[in-house]
Length: 167
Image (cartoon, rainbow, N blue to C red):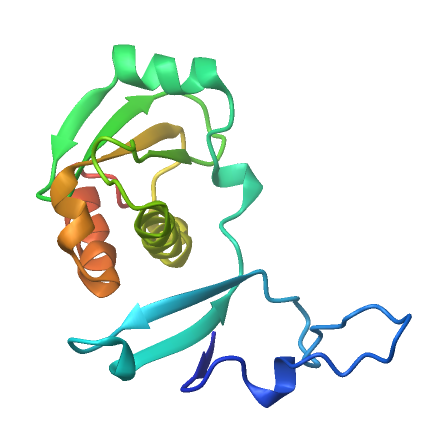
């Protein structure tokens, strides 16, 4: 993971000439996909930006029927900022997760996106420790809008431990 104190860093500014494609390759084996703003203190002056790889497509719930199955058959583990609905599929495929952040729970679209990035980043970092064969949906509550990114990421770990989701 790359950390930057200023955004955009010199390495990422567009140095392409007219007619050429922009290239974000920093000499790394992967291409950064997501820029995430993480607040450490009380205000944006204390913010740090970092680039991370995206949450794998193999670990995402994509179809509406998968979300409905988890909601209908799954058990729910409550946290203060979100509820985690889990359904055990009974196979050895990787666990998959989705996010539901309704407009009625969090009004601001950029805040909804920040919450989704925080949850997916925490899952991406911990997916190696998650048992196989589960489908999960994070249902964000209005209290999630008042939390900092680091608090949401920590709460994902705590709720996953409470649900006995780790190996």
